[in-house]
Length: 173
Image (cartoon, rainbow, N blue to C red; front, side):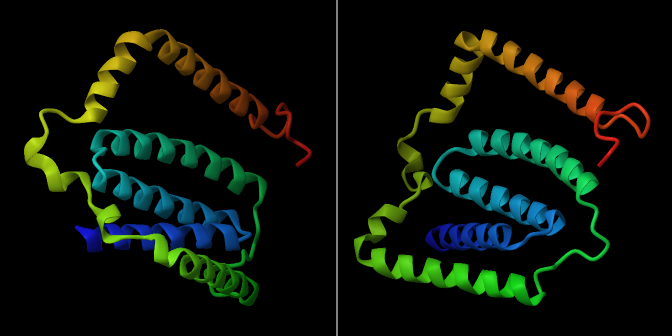
């Protein structure tokens, strides 16, 4: 399990480097999906499978909206990919910075901190994230309803802004 968590964390850092170094929204959105998947894998490894699932679904839904909106506004005929020279230079610089910082903090990390929640599974009666979900739905029901209305209002505002060529607010773009 330690090696799986190590791969999740390496994938998380590589995805963050891919997002930070790429100016094109197409490839940056793909990097964000990779980062979301790897981060949710880290959450699953440390004992939050339900939180990970909910976070992944909500994040991917939001990323779909943001990606569609940014791709519509920044339509490039030839976007820069991960193989172009400036993007490779940025990725190399970011990875060098990550290597320097991990070398600086390497002495403070111990193997005991890599222990996941599943190692002590026989001592658990119920999962902590499931109890948090029950509390959210019992005492936080009003906030969930307000959040749903805010999301619906945001969707209607975005649809009104991008409605069409003749009537939308962004027709000059």
